[in-house]
Length: 102
Image (cartoon, rainbow, N blue to C red):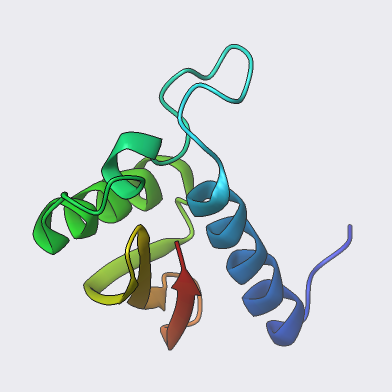
């Protein structure tokens, strides 16, 4: 049996979060709800709270190894946002923060 070390688990979770949030909804065959909707981000009209809820929904659905505590969205430029994701890894009770531009 192969077990991942702590740093491998954290790196794996961070990679999965990036994949989930950097994928456009409808891009993955047979998983039409996977990823964020481009219309949420492209025109810059979406409210930050709506983007935060979409991030929480995607991570709660597709990354079962974590519990999202909080998502803060900051504007970077028109059509670009920065997401600060505060979460805990369920196995091991580790807290982590990941910042992504979406």
